[in-house]
Amino acid sequence: MRGIEGKVVVLGSRGVGKTRLVTSYIKNTLHKDIGPTIAASFFTCKVMLDDVKIKLQIWDTAGQERFKAVAPMYYRNANAAILVFDLSQHKTFREIKSWIQELHRNVQEPMVLTLVGNKLDLLAHRTVTHDEAYLFASSIGATYFEA
Image: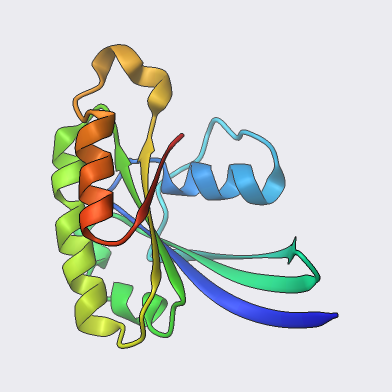
């Protein structure tokens, strides 16, 4: 059985739910009281894909502006990026562009990109349409999901 390692960074503005998405996936549970991330959090998980054992390093970066200067050291050498925005706050969607620019400045190798519109449960407050997000994701070569 083959084994490979990969590094995934989770990026997005403050309060979009990056940590909740990661912890829900890693721990398979929903934690309600999660405070803001300071600089970055690090998680690992193992995934089986066909006959390949994949060990993922998941770096959950802080979205606050004051931590943006140290973010490049967390996503250097990353293989993939999950870009998260809040479906109910259009500003967080627009800010994804600056995260992508930051990735292009600091990551030389091609990356797998995934755009995630989070907080789908706030459907009544939605400000970013599925089509708008999907078209943007396509324009940057990313897949698109809503959570």
